[in-house]
Length: 267
Length: 269
View 1 (tube, helix red, strand yellow):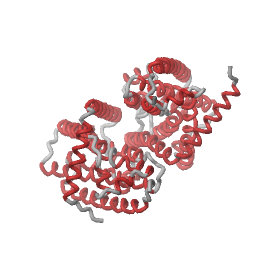
View 2 (cartoon, helix red, strand yellow):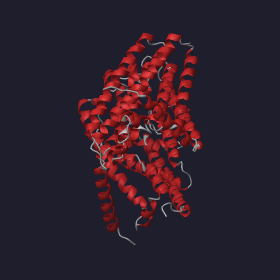
View 3 (cartoon, chains in turn green, yellow):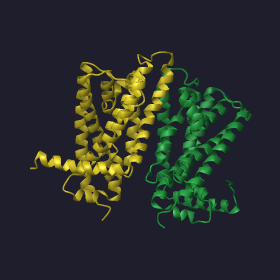
View 4 (cartoon, chains in turn yellow, blue):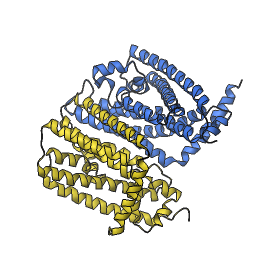
């Protein structure tokens, strides 16, 4: 259950990162395409909100610009997902099926770490930037200048959010060891994550319970956005960090159990 | 000249193949299904919250529930993935052996659509019936005439979406970003075809523009027919719109197919 980070790990990560950047720099048109895609997504999301707010002034007790802050956080996390998780651990299900995972396991590195961070679509990090810009603009429109404590809380809760999103992917992808034939497990994440686009307080009670305790996507967007808009006591960030720690440990355990089931296919 | 019986036999074989192929990917299909229903489910959740204090322009909570349940079903019955298939067929040369067959590749695609839809829509229908047993809000009034009309509208909508998807997928003959165009189409249809909200709840100017596009006819119209939200002359207008736009997209598909094939230089050698 330990997660040691030996010195060599950092060197491996740095090497992987260099290779990826060099590879991606060959396809510069992809940068424009991905940027346009993100802008289109943001416009669509804002228009969606505009439709809802034609008929209400508050959504789950949040007003328009507060929900836009949340959209900014959502977009930031989308950037992390598309840049790191989908191209890395998102490919796991296919590899469990084809036996390609053998090659990973044969390497003298931590399998989970390698599978998770082997591939980076660097262009998609522009989503992180655009998301933060959107959140900042919405804060400006709210007329709220976050205090240092709130900014710190935002930093901690956002980091916790990244960990929770990562853990969700690990948990989902571990299912591949039981349901070998399912290659599109990442679709399940997209389906569930759709719910994170709005504050959890907007959902009926049962669904809210699910999103906070069972499939903890409330911790990924609602909590960081609340920290930024001052809805949250800054000290609550520690709870978010604890949640992230527990979720991470649980999925690490699940990964270990799942890996034991893997018998390899090419062997 | 081949007789109708020949075609029946051919479709029998194509459907059986498609059905058996899907059988291998049962779990995957359930995941796509889940992905398809979360968007309307989340939209319903938000409208449910907004309608807490009373009806929104005549739409009470129960109306939203009925609308989005009907939308899930109609969407699943009319959805078409063909542009994604065609894009990879064309780029990776998998179109070649399909062209060599004595039957147009579109028939294989049609058969796949029927098999996929029968399976997924069947699942939604079962879930709907179970939910309706416990939750009166999503029950539909019985009416043989209305259901027959809905069936016709769903069929037309499915045909439209098939040709829209197929024609857009054929753009892969010219560009590597055909699927991006389909994503753009999906983004616009979110608003104009009623996936996000009943068209009546959009800004009036947008709703007025929407009726001149094909979008309302691929989802909103059959959904409104099913829930009983359209009557009289509007029903006729809806069918006219569906038939006109179906003809337009059929034409677009024919042009893209003949022009594209002439350009196609077969990647796979």
